[in-house]
Amino acid sequence: MFPTSTQCKYWMFGSEEELNKLRERANQKHIQIHGRQMNDSVKYEFFLTPEEEKIMVKRYELHLRDFCKRFQPPMPRCVVGTSFHYFKRFYIHNSVMNYHPKEIMVTCIYLACKVEEFNVSIQQFVANIKGDREKATDIILNNELLLMEQMNFHLSIHNPFRPVEGLLIDIKTRGSLHDPERLRPGIEHFLERALLTDAILLYSPSQVALAAVLHAASKLQENLDSYVTDTLFGEDGRGKLEDLIDAVRGIRSMVKMADSTPDRNQQKMLDKKLEKCRNPENNPDSEIYKKRMQAILDEDDDLYNTISAQNHSMDSSALNMSIPASPEVA
Image (cartoon, rainbow, N blue to C red; front, side, top):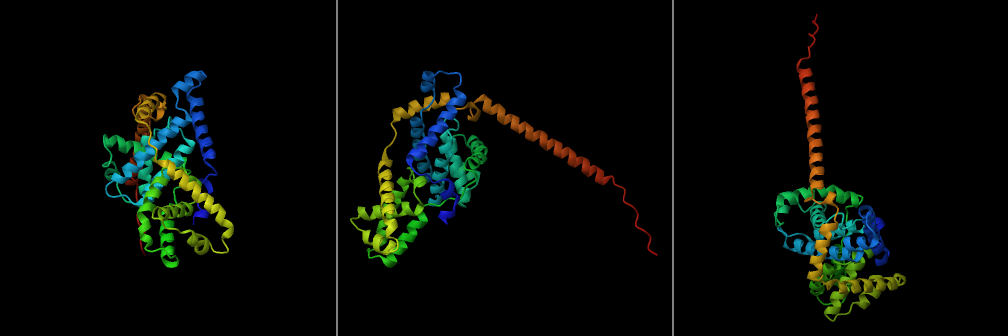
């Protein structure tokens, strides 16, 4: 149930302003740590601003959507929705200057495949990635635990897809709309765009689902107001109706703004800026990162050799044990 879930308790927020403040805090934290030796004017030129980080995240949300669409075998909608939740959650408390969105994006999708039981191996997964697949495998597996830790291991996600199915069944059963299945293309288009907004962090899955259904109906010049007021809520639920109307308006307003695509020249400029200011300790192409990973591998090798030596010693001792003779039976 959503009301008792970790999603409802820890990952729903009161407003876009609250989300923006948390993201600004992550941005400032990175700059304070890595820009200690710089004056303010140099910091502004060197590091990404909170708004620039937001543009970068938005761009990689579009990449996430397109990657999931092209994925083979075809990816279930729940995996796509869960991937978006993970990606958005991660960048509430982390800066893109610390962890590149390209690397976190594929890790989110891979983890979502596991959680939603869409069974693809890491080899099948990286077969959908262009470029160095061995490097992609290392990046995903190295970031997987980090991603889970940053979400406090709250991995279960309630997406709006199931509430949509419930609403369509209810409209067919108790509503007067002719052929509610006509709404489905409009609903799916709306939900795809909703995932590109903060709506899924501000409104419950059932509210997003209802907004999608009402939007799809309005596009077909159909009116479901009487269904919502009289059938869905009835007399007992009239007190909650005003809040629901505000929520639906808010969601539809956010979705309406989701079509804006980043400027290409701005994208190139931000890419260059990010390459300069990103944390080298988390950059797989940096020497610092390579040395750190090699040190971890060396530690693992030392541990393996120590355990192997101990096991060999125990095996040798066991083989050299003297077995006492059985007592004579009278």
